Length: 103
Image (cartoon, rainbow, N blue to C red; front, side):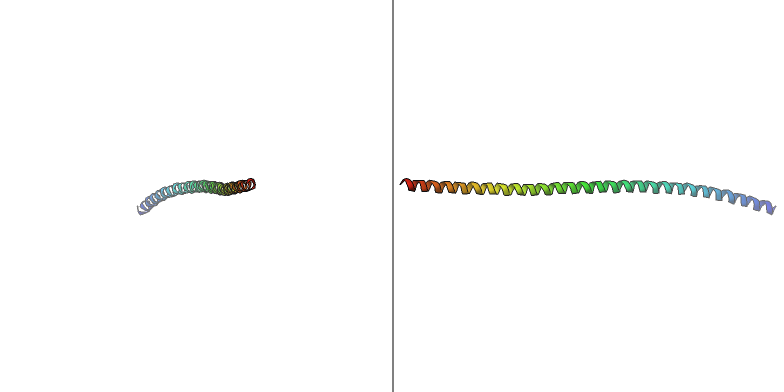
């Protein structure tokens, strides 16, 4: 009778062990799927990050070009303004000289 009881306990333990192995296998599959999903998400995130960095660089370059061209424009406006002032001074001097000549 003891041999039969030992055999029953052994079969019960074998059944429990098989159930535990099946659960472990399921958990390993889930872990593998999660790891794969994590890798995919990380790659997608890295790609989006790189695209955003590129976009930021483009915008900064465009802004820098705008500042440079804006600086060139303002320098050109300054030069034109100076030219106008000098032209007016020359015209005034010319009028003064013409008056003196007439006198």
